[in-house]
Length: 238
Image (cartoon, rainbow, N blue to C red; front, side, top):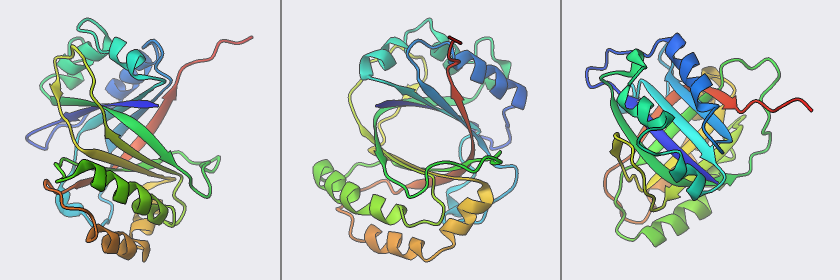
């Protein structure tokens, strides 16, 4: 499975994307051909305690769009399509003037013990992480990370989803800036409180112990907790 990430940032740190704009984007992306699922990420309403608060507030808005293959994803990134209009803010005043980046990556999903959110869950929260890179040896980096880190992530209390995204080559005609982070991760929890609880557990000590064993890399990493809205295409009624 392929994921396209689009990230909208504000250099002043003062902008917020209005909920009406988020709703409009949610409706728009449903009509992208062959897009199977979209995640819309917005900042938390209040600060959540986590070990990497020094990384800052993160983007004001972000998208993760899933496609069944690279060709479907590339087809959606034409210069006159929905994604191009979002990248420029054309017709979407709430997005105008934001710094927009995009990246296409391979999605690697890993098992969790309980995948479904409780029925009354209204505020799922994702922990978005990225490693800009580079690594001295990407193959060594991926071998170590994929073999060790997801198994530790699985032991976080009540984690609902673990995904790791690795680099691929792609072509597009979007007006936004391409980035090529060497890796992204996503952990999903039922709520900001559940995320904070998990990151306050002893599991974080095991994560850090593995971190010091990583093959050499540069660029550090960034961690951002984000509210998460999942959008799926409407299925026709039989």
